[in-house]
Length: 214
Image 1: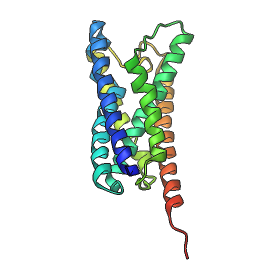
Image 2: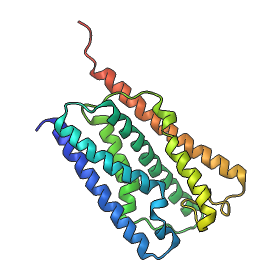
Image 3: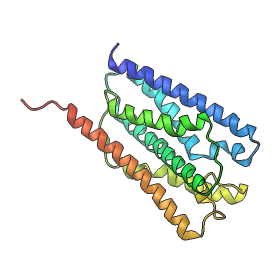
Image 4: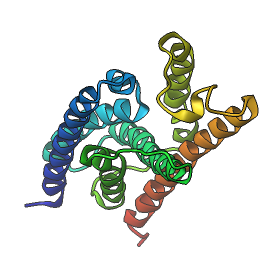
């Protein structure tokens, strides 16, 4: 079995695992009968992982029928991976901060899979999958479009429903505009940094696969 076929199967398996974890997390949240559970689809992690399922399924089909991924797919994958990996890093920081503040945060297996294991595995696949194309540096600013749009909708919606997906966006839980702006800037910087690393890796791999002149 050629390498592309193997990675196609792995993409399908990752998509299935992600979908199962999303369904479990949805019903786990609903069972808690809290406003957070009722706003499951408001989380950036959930939205980005839904996109990841779609992209992985498309990527699996491409791996089965093509020797290399088309450039548009590599661009789409780099954007989605930026969002899911950053969401995982942000969640890890939130859990750590909650522990320091003595706040209990339940992390079911589905959250562990969505925030930690899948981002780690997909980042590793980005390093190893054959047939990747190099992506341009414009991916870095482009990767900020979704979190900025999501943040704008979240800040508009928050006062309406009386709830925010993450504590650092809630005006009631931060000390004021300076802390809100600082944490938001740090979050965007992490998105940009993750995107830059993915771009750099893709361009290094492309150079590594170029044939030397004869």
